[in-house]
Image 1 (cartoon, one colour):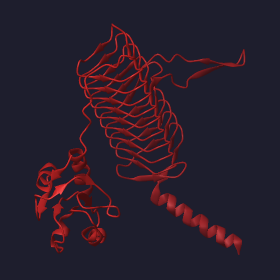
Image 2: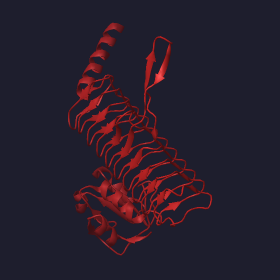
Image 3: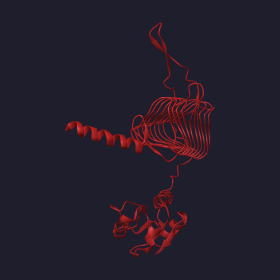
Image 4: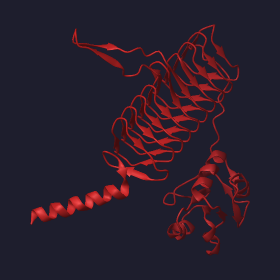
Length: 333
């Protein structure tokens, strides 16, 4: 949806330098930009490249105002955020038609808002409630009593088990499974087998959450698994039963969070992190990729990066690596 640079400046709260009538059609990288594109520069060392590329305009920080004006600029203290905000204007959410495909199977006891779109071969069970302006894509399953709030997008082949409540403006990508049984078993030593522990709790997903493709989130065993508002899960993330994920948490791909673990607000979790059961990650901590946190441990330190297995502050981890490297070299001599 093309927009003038003046419109984008207002929408992103940026200061315009240059011709505001320039029309922008899409966002692009500096390397692949063409006329009609908008690019951004996070660091000044890339500004010259941006000004020389084929893009029609550049979003940059305040220091860019002093450069020669080879093309229009949008000046913003947070260029990357402004660029992402411009994307919401240039690539608006699709306008899904308010309709139910004839092949969809909807129990008459379910409540589906008239403004919601239901695609082919979707199944919605009894007493499910789906809010206004939702989009439920092809082949989804919404279990009995599930609640989905307004303005949600649920992409193909998502499965939502009974006992799940989903807030407003949640995006669930293809193949995700929400509310399945947790991995809980009790050893019967007399008969030499495992007996399934009851998995009868709930899953509660807050507003503005995004859940990546093929994520799996277990219901609580007896209580609740909770995903806080604003949290973003990458593809292939697993959240175990009774886990509590705070608000505005970011978790990268292939991370596993074991049962009864707790991650506080505003944490950042890198890819392939392993979090064992009953771990507490206090608010604001940052876990580097492939870190491991053993059972019952607490990680605390807002803004502190933790790395390694077992995870410790990265400055300590790097010191240990340096010592190990010196010892290895000495041994080699």
